[in-house]
Length: 139
Image (cartoon, rainbow, N blue to C red; front, side, top):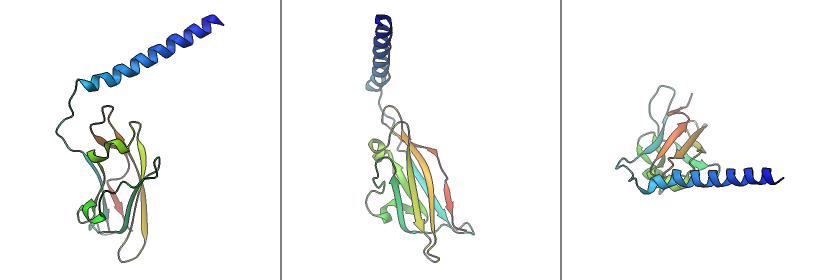
C-alpha cells in the first residue's frame, strides 16, 4: 500500500516538475515577429473565388465565433476568409480546436461546411492549422 502511494506521489511530482519546465522555457524566449494567419478560400465549380453569404467560423470547444469585426474585415480578398490569426492565440488550445467554417453561395443559396483544426504553440505565440482544407469548392 505504502509502496503504491510513494510511486504515485513520485510520478505526480515528476509530471508536475516536467510540465513547469516545458512552460519555463517560454519565459526566456521571445515570440518571433511573424504574424500567422489561418485562412480558407471559397471557390465556385470553375475555380473562381467567390464572396459567400453568411460566412461563419465557430470554435466547437468554446462555441464562440472566430470572426473578429465584420465579415468584410475577415475577407481580405474576394473569396479568402481569415479563420484565425495570432490575435486569436488565446482562443485556441495547444492540443487543437475544431473550427466549423460555413458559407452560402450568393447565387444558388447552397451552403458549404468544412472542419479545420487550429492550435496554438506551447508558448502561445502563434496559431497554426493542423488539419482541414485550403479551399472550399461549391459544385
